[in-house]
Length: 209
Image (cartoon, rainbow, N blue to C red; front, side, top):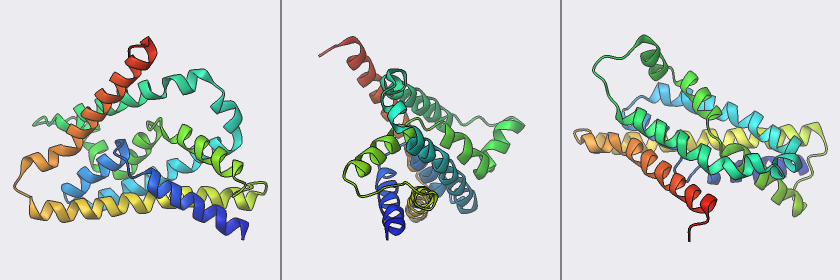
């Protein structure tokens, strides 16, 4: 029962936690809008794989990570930089791309691995959730079976949410396929979120009220 509960709780928080706009879900929305279903599935699978080690690190080192000021104080800055760069990359559409860029764009798996690793919010998110669930004594994670059940729930929840977003985006694209603004929306949102996060970081760091 503890194993099943660990899986279900991890799945739920992973699914819900992936809903707010971020680098991964906005990227897969863009793939859905472009009707690149195969690439979207590979991207979702790779991004979900990366969630596994992030969650494992959170389980193993939650006390150390949550008490490290270097990590906790700079998460917002790292996230803002990543989102701004990805927003610029998504909006920049050169007529001729290099072989490396073209290969990265076509390979959903490589793209999912790289962007999953560049998602700085995953680690603190799972540190917070794991600490919260342990504090409520809803999970124990004292056995290998419970730990890997928990981690599998994390990966599966992220994968299902990304696939759902890709499917919804594809449906929208069929209705607005001639509107270029729709396909640019993920990049615009990434830029907006990135600059907002950077603005919040500056306010918090320099004490502006």
